[in-house]
Amino acid sequence: MGPVIGVLFDGFAYGMLLFLLSVGLSVTLGMMNFVNLAHCAFAMLGGYVTVTLINTYQWPFLATLPVAFLAAGAASVLFERVLYRRLYGASDLDQVLLTIGLAFVAVAVAAYVYGTVQQPVRVPAYLRGSVTVAGLTLGTYRLFLVTVALAVTLVLVLALEYTRFGAQVRAAVDNQRMARGLGINVGLVFAITFALGSGLAGLGGALAIEIVGLDPSFAFTYLIYVLIVVSVGGLGSIGGSFAAAALIGISDVAGKYYAPQLGAFLIYLVMIVLLMWRPVGLFGRR
Amino acid sequence: MSIVGAVTEPHAYLRSQTRWRPVELAFWLATLLPYVLFPDYLVLASAIAITALFALSLDLILGYAGIVSLGHAAFFGLGAYTAGLAAKHGWGEPISGLALGGLVAGIVGYGASLIVARFRHLALIMITLGMGLLLEQAANSASWLTGGADGLQGVKMWPIFDVFRFDLYGKTAYGYSLGVLFIVFLVARRLINSPFGLSLRGIRENALRMPALGAPSRAHIRKIYTIAAVIAGFAGALLAQTTETVSLEAFGFQRSADVLVILILGGTGRLYGGLVGAIIFMVARDQFSGNTPQFWYFWIGILLVAVVMFLPNGVLGGLARLGALLRGRAP
Image: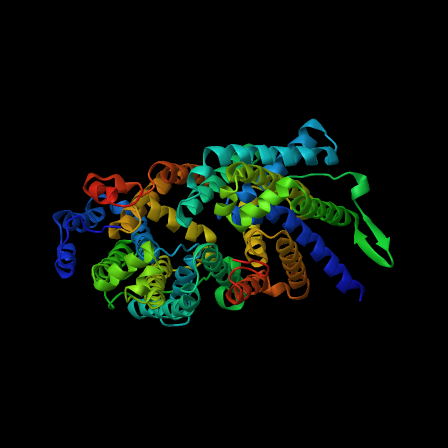
């Protein structure tokens, strides 16, 4: 029984990482229908900010996390205002091309500045090792990751449900035209949401280093997982992203543990079957 | 969208499109120049012809039917592995190997088209991407068959028609690839300038309205997707046969992304777009990428952003002859 729960826990922790990486994309996609394939490039930026602050400036790990969040959010606003917003009404193809282009540039810049090697990061001693809870040995860092992700989820859900801004976001996701008609500045709401979402991706990128490492290919490797989570969970749904991320994380880790010869095969198969069954995702409405 | 400026009778319009222009003849004659001018670069020329064939295949679904695919390398890889495996296991006859590669890719393509025709937008992008990744993983996992990450070794080709032996300098390889490209191009040209080709363009512009006009969108998409898969399979088979090896990279996301870039570079929805794009892309990569491929992608990325921002209808769309046609389109 022990290994099963261990795998479930590791999978859940991995899923929470995917949730942080993908929730922003889910909401912005749901709102603007903008296919942002550069989303993970912002996550990668967060990761490199943390690496630089720790290795060059000797910052403590925890202090770098908010900076990673802010840096990714700020960079994303810049791109949103300058490039993305011109393409909101454009075709899928144009959006895909623009954002793939940005991701290519991000990968090349990261490779130029940091090289193509994995970035070493030492998390502080209190986050290393493992703790034993009720006879189960759980990795401390993974517990920390799950705690952060759950806290973020709670804040997101409460903010979306009970604040004025959250109501505007929900209105814009549900019916953009109607929201505009009611006097909501959808462009502004979108820009803020986009920044928050990219910031969360940056935070996820920073937290991911300890689990999956960081190299320039991050922007594409995890993009695929993020897109899977988003399309399975349904656009614009935080709960959907959460459930899909947990599902994908657990099936990926369990698949690699119990059937390593299949590799990631299983996860792609699950995605295609799910999408064929429900093209709008598990929790999507449109 | 107005395809023609002047109102003409449909069949007269189609016939006028099928007429060969001098510039086209010049283009195809020029493809023979590498034999005379650059005999040292025939291997590259062969790779260009194969890439052009692959880009032509994507153009049929993306440029004409408006299906955005991020996993088109799936069919390229299928063709490559089929032809490679056939040759490895004792059947090195090129033409039948090529046909077999196209056939397998076509069968899988038809299966996939049943799914693809039902979706648009994000779900479509994700499903095509997922299928490409799925096949790449499958090829990686089935290393007993495909050689996995080491690639497929031991592909031995027989001479074409029992006469033309594959040589180190790519003389036969280029002639073979170019010949296949030309024949497929003729078929594609005929296809695009037919009523079927016109309905594909209608689907690209408005997939919901076409059924109302009596053209079944999904059936057309299934047809063209299968045809494109066969052509991509041919391209993969050509690569396997001319290089006598197949690697997992044949299935890779990078290949799907590259061919998209090539098509954008040359201009989508134009038969020569993929061909011109392939020449520019492959020659530029050969000259500039060297041993630092990451930086090559920096410029590709910049190029993509610039194209989307400043030339929304493709780079070569700016050519004067097509300028008038482009202005007729919605911005």
